[in-house]
Length: 405
Image (tube, rainbow, N blue to C red):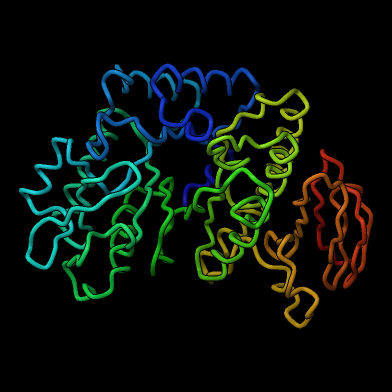
């Protein structure tokens, strides 16, 4: 299993709240505000994009982070572990680019020369070739140095998809004609950094005890990568064998002018309540005291059922059963369950049906066969049945516990 603390406690990222201008003072002030607001159950602080001196150098920018080791010590004194965002690219302007070329650490073209690629933060970049042991050692050694010299606990590993390979790439293995084998090598290599590691891509990596992150979600309501896509994505990951799903940040990534409304933020938090992990970036106190109160109540609810969450996580390591399951999982003979994409299960006994429609405080909920007690008002229902126009005001997440009586 991944780190149990990541399963049971929320953690915080700098990305959506601060984006690329992040620096040492921003990180420390963010951490202090989290503590001051009374969010005491903290897993870790994740320092996201643009902390490096240049992209791929794996060293803190000395101007933005004049004392990274001191910063990490302060964060740990506030009860945070610390992770940083990393990726498999090294940009042309980095000193390590020359090392990568000279020592053949980059994915090569058919002529054996370093293939140059592009990504969202660089147009002339080398891509570390994780199909080679020497390249894996080179890449991992630099991250180990961050751990030993700075105190970083683990890493958020971005990218890794075959999409980023340079043209006509040649990999160093028997699967060289299968570009997606690059992803397999990448994830297998970075999984060595332990149970706090997270990746966003995977291929044949179901055996690795790490979190698989959903791709960046947009701060909107719809199926177009917004809130409505959260549960279908969660269920799909589990069905294909990746139970340790890391949903994207509460409220999405706030790209451009897409700052989530208070309503969207709260409903997003409620939808995420019984999923394997909770990640914050946009701060609940940017809204009002009611938002902070509701978020804390949902975290308390999550803590109440952490034993059920851990039990489902342990089961996943034994037989591959998803932590979060579709409704049809508990009764595959009930065709009524097949088209429900806005409800999910935690294990076999907790059914979650959040509000995912803007401006709504009611929804239809389907309960499969069995007896179900509402976690909100303890009313007993017997399924299979539809609960029409079930009332769920802004501070309520509908969930039901299966019972034997």
